[in-house]
Image (cartoon, rainbow, N blue to C red):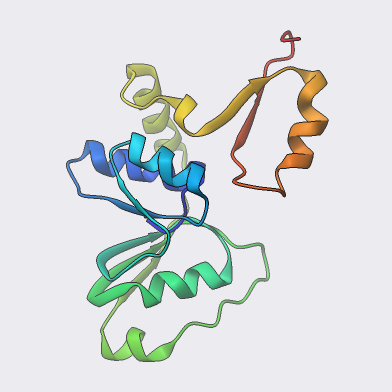
Length: 161
């Protein structure tokens, strides 16, 4: 798994629950610690794997995912880049290593229903993928902090002081 943000951590947790050995690569120590708490191995840089999920959504991460793929591997691009973005990819591994590269949009109604069922059953704890719960008075500060470190989803509870 390339990327230890909320989507990468959620995917890693689901793969661990399915019995897979999972490695999460992220540059932020906090995210690596979260990945380990969810049952994955955590590293700063991804090495060669037979299945690589990209969960960052930046062209350089798409490239890193292709470069981390072992010959014959499948690369799943989950992190959506902004509309109009182009991602130059190295052609040698795509062709000579016969990689299978797939895009994956993760918000179909069926997938949302499945995710909600997992949350409701307690199989997946949403708190592992979110930042602290804050009140409205802390929202400006929390939004400002998103650019300064390992950003996670912000949970706002309006009644909280």
